[in-house]
Length: 293
Ligand code: SAM
Image 1 (tube, rainbow, N blue to C red):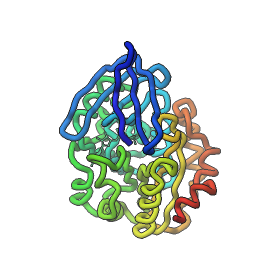
Image 2: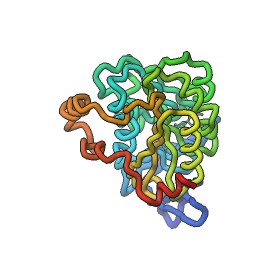
Image 3: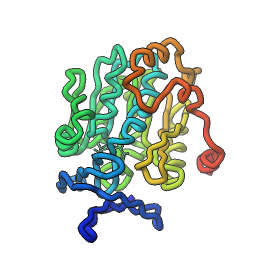
Image 4: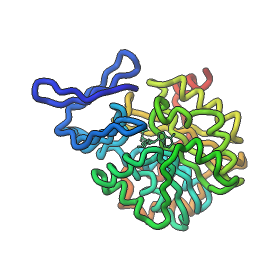
């Protein structure tokens, strides 16, 4: 995806282009922050329909209105499937939303975040405090470096869960969609470990979704893609690819863990419900077709 902010007749618009002949356009109230970092253009704007937006290289990465959909689903599905995770690695995720959700799990001891761009973290602390204040928790350790290098060096079997909360595979995130990277993720997971990776939309990037699915099937014992409805993603939806190191019957959620979590966090969750979890690994026919190739 590509995009840019434009000024027309006294109004400001963000236009995202992609796939090639589709343009999605948001009218913005105000551009609040804009900086070119060594990795990408980082912009934060206030929009009419979606509240504040974090825009990286012209593409919406987070919006206040629908961020909960994405962050609850990327964090809680693996954290509820793994029996009481204690140690999690988040690759990317510089807005802090995924960490905020992970901290809702009892027993979480340590969350490492490897975010390449320190400017994203600093800007989100200023403009999205409800997400990025999670970085102030003493269990959270932020490393500003390339996730591909971090996982190569990381100790084997260190993490219960690895979450790849990356931007699109153009620019700095390209290496986060490769066989080498996913193999390192597999190595640093413990025997019951689970990885979840952002793997794009079957309508916008069907080739990437299929490529990630195939790589996961080569590397992990069991693979479960699942869907999230996110209106500010092009096509309104995004898929997560989940890989389990141990095939077992670990795709079964532990009822007591799920019940306990939802009774504690009833008021705090906006999107995920226990009923969504029941059907989470069911795939529509058109997506099955993309994955079959
Ligand atoms: N919800 C988002 C999306 O998919 O649009 C992802 C949000 S999060 C802000 C994505 C983060 O990944 C960005 O802050 C970006 O700087 C970071 N990132 C991109 N490439 C990376 C890399 N190679 N290593 C670590 N972080 C990376």
